[in-house]
Image (cartoon, rainbow, N blue to C red; front, top):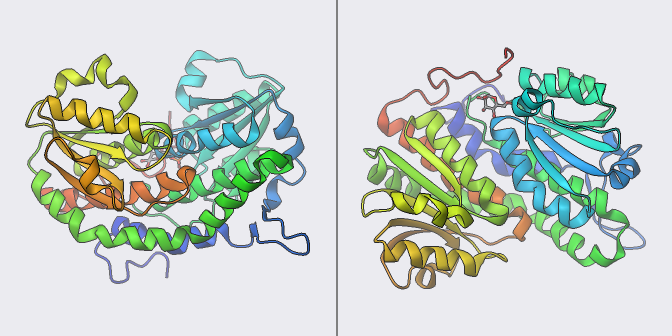
Amino acid sequence: EQINKGKYEHYMQKEIHEQPESLTTTMRGRLIRGGSCKVKTVLLGGLKDHIKTIRRSRRIVFIGCGTSYNAALAARPIIEELSGVPVTMEIASDLVDRQGPIYREDTAVFVSQSGETADTLLALEYALENGALCVGITNTVGSAIARKTHCGIHINAGCEIGVASTKAYTSQIVVMAMLALAIGDDAISSQTRREAIIDGLIDLPNKVREVLKLDQEMKDLAKLLMAEQSLLVFGRGYNFATALEGALKVKEVSLMHSEGMLAGEMKHGPLALVDENLPIIVIATRDACFSKQQSVIQQLHARKGRLIVMCSKGDAASVCAGGSCRVIEVPQVEDCLQPVVNIVPLQLLAYHLTVLRGHNVDQPRNLAKSVTTQ
Ligand code: G6P
């Protein structure tokens, strides 16, 4: 059934729309709601003998390519917050090119949908040689990365066929949020925060179902943008990754130039590009960075930027005060889970742009689902 398009025209479309179900499968049996002592916790069977080592490691290094790298970037802040362990990010090919330092006291986490990406596998071999504890996060049971790592977590998102990764991305973030919860499980000081995240995870499929209702709105936006040459996406904090991943989706399937940018860097270069023609998506949902994003919007308004603002439900009027803009309103969830909700409208936008521009949705030119050569 999973490899059938069902009522959908393309696999990518189907995979975007099945995210409430794939996320449910990812979490199945892993969230423990209580028991006699009423403590909510997570259970990650594949890590049970290693979680203490991970907690005591000197550093956690996330390694991946493309969308898998972006998913790790989205999870980085919550892993840092709940584990207290420094987290660094490595694009697999770059780590190998530099032969960057990896130590025995490191935990190296390899994120890969296919589990077969050559660059990630090479980085894994390099980390094994250097004695790090190697953890795999893959969607493919029995894949090379799943086999060669010391331990790991399957994301259980189901078979993904569209070359552009969608449901695997959201399941990867959820698995890494659960990893953060498992590492931080021994800290009494963050118990309330962890319970709020677990409640947020339980409700997340419903919120994703809600945000999928924006399909027609994103199709209308795609009609407006289909003839553009370029699109920028600004995000920060938890949603820097959303900006990178949204732009990656647009460029890989619709073949429109698109760049995701850290909003904090806007004034250090990208601001020069702003005029009344270039469309810019600003992600400004509610979290600790919200007021900073409001000031970014003001600065873009002052330069007559053509803005599309993604904000939390109920914030439409306030985020656009001081200029005109189009708004995408999304349901608010726990801050560290917001990237799972926020990416969905951008996946829909990339999908509709591709169909409208007449390109191949499931097999974009020059790209492969799994890149097994260097
Ligand atoms: C290819 C695919 C991307 C994917 C990347 C990493 O470039 O086209 O969609 O994100 O590989 O793949 P992995 O299977 O390692 O997640």
